[in-house]
Image 1 (cartoon, one colour):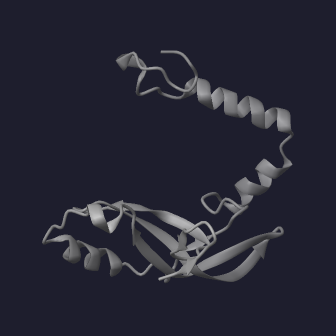
Image 2: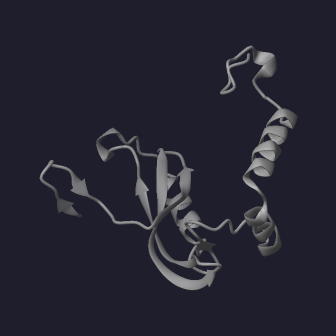
Length: 139
């Protein structure tokens, strides 16, 4: 399936990015971007279109517990054409508008830090009532 390196590991696939993870009845799969095409530049940031993806079962096949409906779920998921209208960038936030991104780029660093701190203080901690320790250290 791939190339064997000097460490004894095999390269299963080369990828340009991770689309995400999905779990069906037998376990988790990782969805990788295996082919991309550069579509544009926005302010020096490259924007790519997903051309092809690959799903890889994460646990080793030797520990796989087979389920009769797994193949059906895989076919349904793979009918979603991730290469039709999916775009990404390594350095540009495509989830915000150009106007917002340009505004953030022009903000002084001190304003960004205070805005992030203010948002963190206004955020809701789902573990607060459970008495669990969160990243902030309070609990």
